[in-house]
Length: 208
Image (cartoon, rainbow, N blue to C red):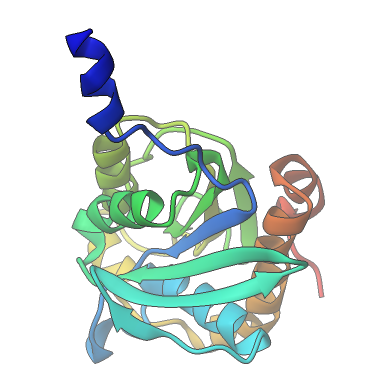
């Protein structure tokens, strides 16, 4: 009898709303990081918001924007926790918006992939990426969709940090707008077509 009454006053976990999505772009806040390779996640979301004539506002743990994609609600999140603490913001917004982890997509740079190539997966290792490491710790799982945007590895041994925190080359800048357009389409596809179709269509190099 006591357990019955306790259950009446205990908040039951709410079922996730499967029509809602969380798209997270990883990066570092501040003007000095704005045009760096490490901030490609921010750039993808900026391009996505622009394509929908939407804008970000500062909210808890990040800049946030909400858009509709074929009737489904997508929350776009640019964490302001800096890269190494990205998971804190992701966990908060998943819970706040009652979004299933499989309906989230974390967008990040990857030095193990050629510039302009995409690798979208349902799960995987952090691959040495601090933002993904923290996300895995905070979510207590490595099974969450991620979108790795290739930034190449044109750096000498020991210069990895300088490279990812460095700005795009002139050649990369030339192609970046096209790559961002493809990335925006991949994000939209994730919401309205699902992960499997998005992987089939968008993984690999985007040729223009």
